[in-house]
Image (cartoon, rainbow, N blue to C red):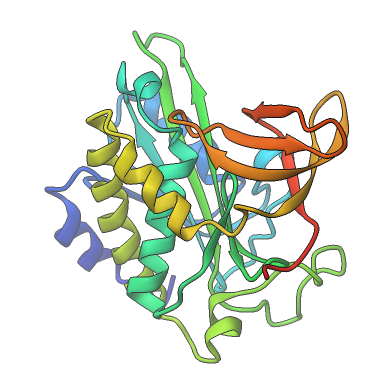
Length: 269
């Protein structure tokens, strides 16, 4: 990464949780896969895998994450959360808040959160995403969590692939100027450490209030797709566990959505 000084990053973060070890791969299939390999080798919590390009980058539900060289941040963080994994706010929510704050710090942009893990400019353009994967590698006593983060920093030189061109955007495209990746990585590691420290306390209200403030979906009508059905509803709130509370169209039934896909059906008033 020509515009990221790894020596500076390693020096500045070696005594912090996030960035205590930075594993750089110019190209890799997936930074998440590398992070799980490092977990099996007992790398410390907060180890970061950073790559300039991925050949098999993935989002939620196995969706492809377009990861060309020189245009994005493709980063995974290795965590050993222990009991904190289950008593705190879902990892994708607090990590998404960290991404939003880092983008504001580094690029001066106030973007929005689309539940549960997408970073949006407006209602239609996706700029980034967060994926949390939990596994128990062989030989380890407790589950390992990996946070995978992808941020579109600049538009690809040849343009976006046709299948995502209408819904993808980059920080540079939104800001109308270049956004230094070095500055963004620094801000991201700092904000991840800050949010993780709050999440580990089990105190959810501070984070939930921030999610409510930065979300683009409250009071909106959405199309919900789960594994078994598709329906429309209006989003009301989040419960203390970060579960989405909706009112289903037609029946007025209150639904608590733990996982699924939502599509915003109308622009914000």
